[in-house]
Length: 416
Image (tube, rainbow, N blue to C red; front, side):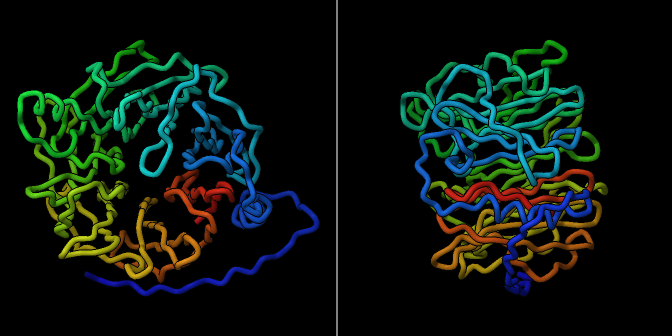
């Protein structure tokens, strides 16, 4: 594996007395100032809906440039919007749907997406009474969040089993694609006396703008890891591409990649992406990342602790996963480097991940300007003193931003 050097960046804290109107070109400076303002002393009693009390935060830019952030607290979801790339946010608004249980922790969290017609799309997992059971839920707003449709259950089997770790993509025209981990095939096999391991990957599609209100349910792969998040993107042919952790042979947990043909009548078998030989009888709670660039190159990151590879790795593919570049090692394994995310803009590849120095969680960043052929030195962006969520990269107007929620300190967003 290729190992990249790391440097630590020292941050100087400057107290600003006078607030100066900000232009878009000052977005990084604005974020530096805002993140200092939003820090707290950590003494928060989480009885209210403030974002500081959330365990996870999901962020995304709407087509008009507004930044939305979404979180859950006490059987409700809340959101805020920002018109200045996260420097300031609107007042908190509750998603106006009936209260229900909402999974919002670690790899499992509500998702948000948009169409070009002021449509806002939400999806989440609703835990049920029996342990490790849930339904995938969905709600739609046609008026930019002023109202939302009554939630529906996406999985159609009506079984009290596991359906969760959902991921969602919505096109500009409102074509909804949902994928999730589903236990119905394992449930059926156990009912017939068979031994099973893992879950299944399921796909659902609908279009509320065209009054296609019932989600299809289609199995894509069996023997998936049961609680690692899924990564999904759309390639330049308009095909859905999915990356997930799969169970091979005797509990060898590696990443697999599947590209769905446009007509979806022909389905090729998934390609195994990682070959680190991580044998573990349990779920690692470590999903991968996927981003497809304008030349249809697939960029992927993952985490493993196998006998052939430990830590975070990056690789890319020009043939939909049939072959890969040599995996590059990212971060410091000795500092518990984990939870990577990747995004591409043109020839630039950005990777973020977390590390732990014994007292604080750290957010690190590394980038390439040549499609992943070589990378910059790694840079420390910020730290969290009371625990942290997974980091994610989101984009707006050809600028990448990292979104990271720090427990009891609040949501942190920064232009990369």
